[in-house]
Image (cartoon, rainbow, N blue to C red; front, side, top):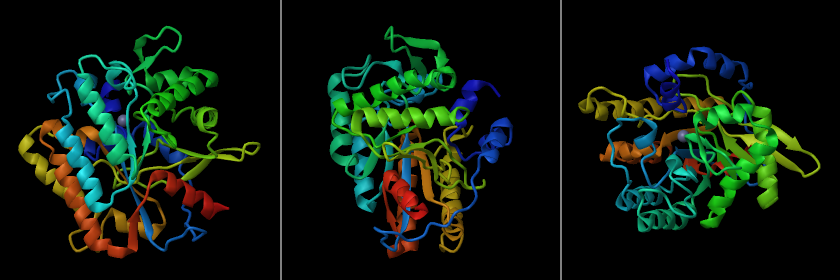
Amino acid sequence: MNKITRRTLLKYTSTGLAAGVLSGSIGKVLAATMPANVKVSPGPGFTGKIPFSLIIDDGSPVDPLFYELPGYETPFLVPARFTRRVADTFDRFDLQGKFTIIPMPSCLGRIDQSLKRVPQDHLLEFLKLMRERVYPRFDITPEFLTHLSSYDLKTGNYRRHMYEDTWITQAPKEEIVEYFTLAFQILKNVGIESTGITSPWVSGIDVEDKYAQALADAQWNIYKRKLTWYFLYAASDNEKPYQCNVKYKNVERGQVVVSVPANAGDIFWSMDLPEKKDRPKFVKDGIDRLVSPDGKTGRIRQLIDSGYPVVIVTHWQSLFTQGTELGLDGLTLLAERIKKVFGSTFEWVKCSEMARRYVESQS
Ligand SMILES: [Zn+2]
């Protein structure tokens, strides 16, 4: 399987194709680093409710697959009307978790300045909706800088031949610190303070110690933040789940870096299906796998019973589904069913809160 296909699929679609990719060499790496099952015990701040988080990757005023997958048919600009509908859905179900904003989406420029081919009022409206409607209930993180070609900090050019996952593998730690610091700074310039970072694809999985330390330094540089976290690991609903994990501690600073995984793949990523008419059933089946209609079975129940974090991942482009908004319709159905089944026993929380409770349970 060529690299672009792997990049597109990983982290994470719930198709059999993606599962096939994972059973290859990358799957072995993941399996080897899988921590043992840990039960989260109640500590201070314990509400008695089971925390759920929703992760939405790849957020941007443009559909990031427009450039990442040549020939992918989608409206280039994601309309503000859609972004507003997403925010309304968050409000309606009190959803919380993590939302990515890509600082230099599709290598078009910086969101705190201007983007090529994107009208400035479109960019500003997207950022206003993010700040006012999404930021209060979601951690907002960068997903490195471009989620595509790496950015050359010295020349200000994009390295067309080197994507960000290849870049981080070979980059010295100091350069990664500078890269992440710039990502946090760009978001800060538009009024958003990030508590952590997201890996595009599975960037950094082969150099995770260096990655976690660079994140710690970058967060310390800008915020002096003692608890920071990253999203790198994702298991689909038929794979062994991951636990949260303290990946790095800096005793002098009293700083910890936590890996927060997702344990249910993107059930709304229906765009790979050859027939568009098959999409609604694909989404419906995905929802049933996470929570059965009677609420008795499903991935979420399994995660709760086995003490793994209930973190669900989806993508901005899956919710948009090439302008049809089919994924967002699916998210609405999923959130409705979760609310009906789990009632007052659960609560949506930010990923930083998931990380905080995990660290608390371990001390
Ligand atoms: Zn991504």
